[in-house]
Length: 577
Image 1 (spheres, rainbow, N blue to C red):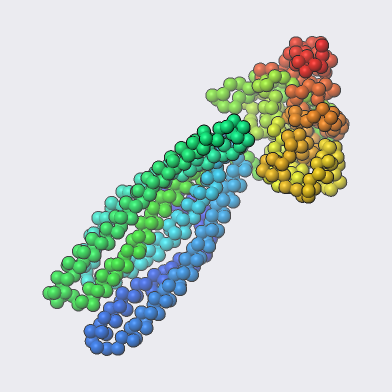
Image 2 (image 1 turned 90 degrees about the horizontal axis):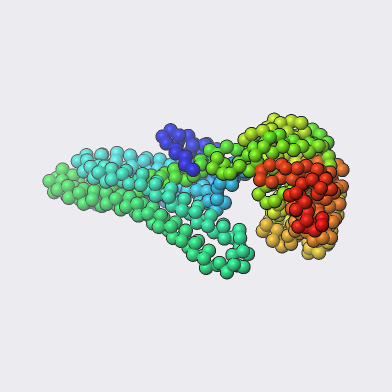
């Protein structure tokens, strides 16, 4: 995944982050310029001190003005620096909000191809680098240019010959630094990619933490993370090497210029063409070039780093996002579902998952999807939720082509319980109300009672306000599944999708949940995926899928008598002889 930002596009992209803070940036920049002006006055004031000493005049006046310039310049520069840092944090906040907003609106198909660790690296590390280029890199470079131009003007007043000597050395070394900058950008891009790869490897181990422990694979996973960290270190060292080379070149420019000016200037003083005080002031201005030249080089380095970060941020922002809109549920009536000759695969290089799938689910009642693993059952739900777009055929919800539904309106009509029943970090109440923030307390109590979560709520130390841990780790698998079902019931959906909703429940709770599903089917359309056929033997209709196709539709009794695959599935679960 690559996105190249060049020329005017770079400026435009950077300005989108700067624009909300432009007034504060201008103020901070002006304060920085005032501080720089105070700094430029110091060598000239030092000349006056030397002249007063040589002429046996009082030095109190020049020394007083020199002290005022030092104190005032430091105070104003500090104020400007604070404004820059404050603005930088604001820029980071805006960039992170914008990036997170984009990430959470990406299509599921795109997110499935990305690594969570790398996404986190873009939100944290890359946005921080962006702050550097937008504050230190650009604004401070403007101040450095002002100081550089001002120092050159003052040096030209002192002696034009020495100025030419200085500029000759600086231009030669500056050309060498210019050749280094593109290498810094390439190295920085590779370094940031390596950090993202390390985050992905670590995220892989943390997501399967218990499996790693149970498998005794700690050393192997540690070695993999260490190897990724080593690659990040090596690429970081490459950045440091090129950056150090640029810094050394800058230092050499000033030092060589100092030696040249000292030699030429000394000869001019000896010939009487230049005063000693002017040579001292010129040398002081020469040393003043160290700071602005260093800031310009540092700003150029940070610009390269910021461009590398901008590329990675833009890679996410360039991905297509799902449309944004306010959900509008016009009716609470149950809706039917129709698949007509639907074909689908997860990618051009992936096998066919649906090959002419056709079935109809009327409004209301309970319909079950059964079949062996890999038959394409969960993909049915993914297509109904429009996590993916089918490539052929037609899917209708409530008589409307699924592509004609506004996405937010479609999902507002659906309640979905995923196969692994995810529970988010937070309190039990927050998880139950996650999909229905406007549910009443009566609705909440009813859902808790119907899913038999009463005992869990009573047992938890803080009841509904008890945190459930990362990914609901403090709950059992069955409790997480019941929380997910209660969450879907609170949504009061027009179509309820349950993917293996009872797979982790014991026999008693499964029986109770079967009753809950049957009750829900009286009010809405319920579509259930089930490997445990005991959950759906009472379904109004059962759709049998195999190898991406529908092979039979009927009730439990009809399919036992008519379909060999269903009879085999039922027999393995002791539902038939």
